[in-house]
Amino acid sequence: MLWTLFSPKEKYLVPQNTFQIKVPEPSGITYNPDADVFYIIGDNGTLFQTDKTGNIIKKSPERGMDFEGILYSDSFIYVSEEMNRNVIKFDLNLKSKATYTINYSGGRNKGFESITRNPKNGNFVMATEKDPVLIYEFDKDFNQLNKQKFEGVSDISALTFFKNDLFILSDEDNVILQLNAETFEIKNKFPLKIINPEGLCFDTKGNMYVISDGMAKLFVFSNPTNL
Image (cartoon, rainbow, N blue to C red):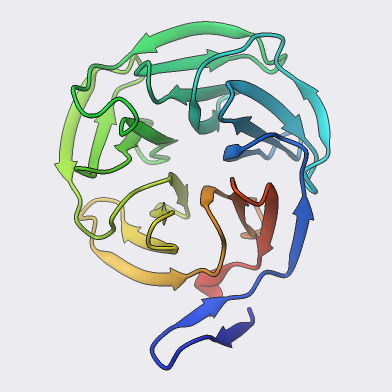
């Protein structure tokens, strides 16, 4: 992994590659290791399948509203609609199969910005964007199990698991945190130099992918935990 120094205090991750993508206002990304493809969502409520460089393969025939978080798990794709407080379950043809409603009384545009799944217990993990930042745990039917306030960042734009650790992407703080998934203790901090980073995932080789909403770009990093 390469580093570059932008200030006396912080070192920023440098991408190995970047790709311009045609998904409008991309707000989330997840990886399907079985097909070696990405699923990317746009703010306008459209789900796309792309290759590893962000080229669009197909898109969902249906439109949602304010798609913000996305997860591939067990041959399904789960998408969080922030304003509607819904999680939509899609099949691999990008057709919706079920919708789950999650109650949350916070600001309409400060709802669930992210979704992932704990590989140890199979529970879903979701986080509100900010004011406050809350991390929720749900069972397979999206019944709430736990809730915890998190003060390590100003906002959360994306969550993902890699090697049983929880990784958090903050748009406002421009940083990725690596956490102990059980205690939420911060193990590592990876500052970024990206405009509007809103999506985060890893592939099976440990390469890390960050997607920028404002730039409509996909940034590729080698595994930062190998540093």
